[in-house]
Amino acid sequence: MERLTIKELLALEPAGQSVEARGWVRTFRSKRFIAMSDGSTIHTIQAVVDFEKFDESVLRSVTTGAAVEVKGTLVPSQGAGQNVEIQVDEVVIHGTSSPDEYPLQPKKHSLEFLREKAHLRMRTNTFGAVFRVRHALSYAIHHYFHERGFFNIHSPIITGSDAEGAGEMFRVTTLDLENVPKTEDGTVDVAQDFFGKETKLTVSGQLEAELAALGLGKVYTFGPTFRAENSNTSRHLAEFWMIEPEVAFADLKDNMDLVEDFLQYLVRFALDHCADDLAFLARREADEDKAKPAAERQAMPLIDRLKFVSQNGFERLTYTEAIDILRNSKPFKKKKFKFPVEWGKDLQSEHERYLVEKHFEKPVILTDYPASFKAFYMRLNDDAKTVAAMDVLFPGVGEITGGSQREERLDVLQRRCKEMNIPEEHVWWYLETRKFGTCKHAGFGLGFERLVMFVTGMTNIRDVIPFPRAPLNCEF
Ligand code: ATP
Ligand code: MN
Image (cartoon, rainbow, N blue to C red; front, side):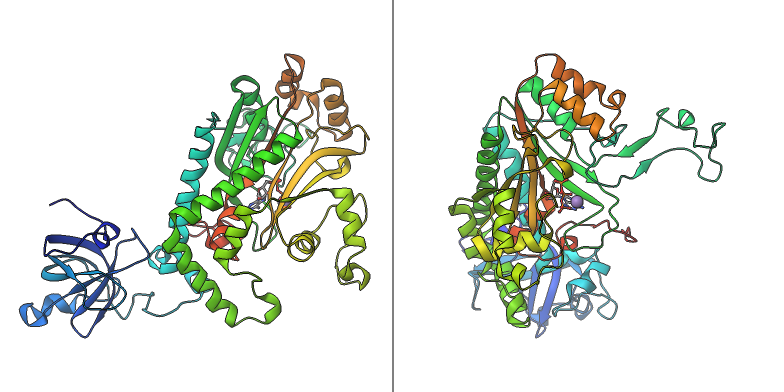
């Protein structure tokens, strides 16, 4: 017999055909109705047993969490909410699960509790839905780029350059920490380390993506990145996944068009392919919202939010214009912002959220930030004060992508390196691409988990990655 998933079984016309299903028991009611889930869909299938026909010892093992297989016939369901059910002829217990010890009782558990049970939380409705959506988005990202002639580049995870400047880095070493070799002047003798130099886990694949784009034309990376940020926020992880497209002969305008089309495509893809899971997550969010004070509730239900973003253009404005808006805003005048709003200072999350959620009520692309707090590789504008940067800000998650047109002029790039104390010998290979056939090019980085947060409505980044890595948190 062909093995079907519960998702496939639920889509069949019930005609008394023989079927099998395997999965984990969610509930077993009235010694008669087994609700089973196998992860293929948010829905369970109902398996109906006539307990008089079964050995009591077998049915005693049908408890919440047990792995079971049922064989029987597929018939129209008597119950509401499903088309089919299985009339069971045979039950095989694959793995029992002690009902007293199994942590996932058939009731609502808090997300905090489930984070402590990350090894089992995939079995819950919420995490099943989140990780199916996460998969769909990952697939859609490759699909989007492939269809448009981009090539996927695997950028290295261990890096010898610390020029990216995107955050604190994790050290990679095979030196014996109990007995670190030292040079004469007392510093660590990195020449004795595995690579003969200091190495770190990468914070971004961008510099390598640029090298690739300047040969392959259009490329993207999709890999893990690491930042030792000691900030325990709901939007930062120490290990997260990033998508970084890079396009040769593209400028800032092309980059904005790409990021907008890309993000809208991904949201639409989820709406089209994850309808059941999103409907569940929308109901979940609405339930949660009821318990929250009015000010913390979502202004728009999840599905409406996704449709809105996929159908409406993003607002595009410069950093300088944003500063004007913020300085004229009510919260600024009433001194409600915690951080200062001043030209030359980076925007904080409270400012970004005001722009997106209160002022424009839609996603915003902010461009042309002051060069002083942006990376050395961003293209210097003619005003010599700002760079051709662009951050996309989304409701709820704040910054979802950061990108720029890259500095393609060798002399300007060398000057910027000097200003930012980046020794040329650290980035000689990067500089060489500006020496041999340089051209304008642009790209951005999308934090994958921030995207999954936005699409699923989950408000803590630790709930959209299977096994989160954060300060003092590396279980599983
Ligand atoms: P933020 O201001 O939110 O810390 P950033 O300016 O440090 O972001 P970039 O260096 O531009 O971020 O990285 C590109 C994208 O990666 C960001 O837009 C965001 O979506 C995501 N990102 C950055 N840091 C983290 C993190 N620690 N955990 C998860 N995603 C992150
Ligand atoms: Mn950061």
